[in-house]
Length: 157
Image (cartoon, rainbow, N blue to C red; front, side, top):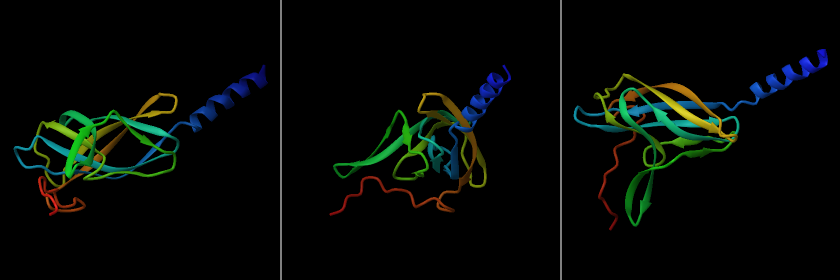
């Protein structure tokens, strides 16, 4: 009986150790102007095991989606995607001009120096969801680690 209990506890402990975690680094949100209703959140994600970013939430936005930007016939297009696969031990960078978390229907202007709470929702290989809360510093327009804004509509001649 004692061996059965010890074996059960060992199985529970091993399962807890095997739980997927995601290292989130260099999180930031691009600042906005007073009338702007959308912005992007950027970061680096490194999972301990295979995982998938499936959603995000923030109290500063009415809608939060995972987006990608891609060139299609010399036009940069942005679109919602259902999730983003993350390979174990490999860092996925969410950055301007690529994958990012889109904050839309903003409830307020986001100013440099503020913090934006974001809850990231992940799924492991067994489809079990888990969340991770982060505080993303807002980078003022034209400053900090934010690259220069993209110029839409420009084409190389």
